[in-house]
Length: 134
Image 1 (cartoon, rainbow, N blue to C red):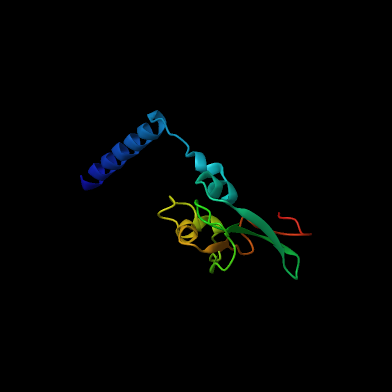
Image 2: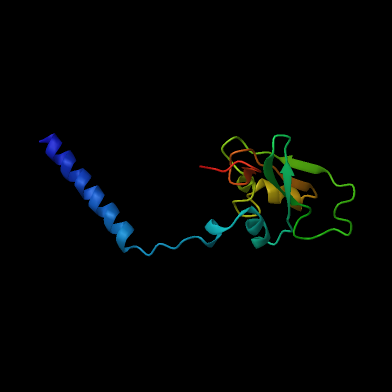
């Protein structure tokens, strides 16, 4: 009896979930297709992109937010630098994914830091100069 009830309950949840996913109008978030530089500029921040070549020919992209949304007269002179480095399976996007008041990269830029966003090998923003991915 209990097995029958659990089976019916599971079937009901499956039907409700399927119906919701089929009949709801899902809207893709416009930011989901953007790269890090596009995300940063979409919030009104300046961004610079650099490609660093390592000794063993890896090309790693690094993004820089030189100042907040309100530029200072001399935006790069004498400012403290904040270098934010990701973990192994992350990317520099992790520091700018949320709203400006919730993202560490934006918060630091708005508080006068020269923000650099680093990446590691193996994520979306790195590749080898000669070797191809399979």
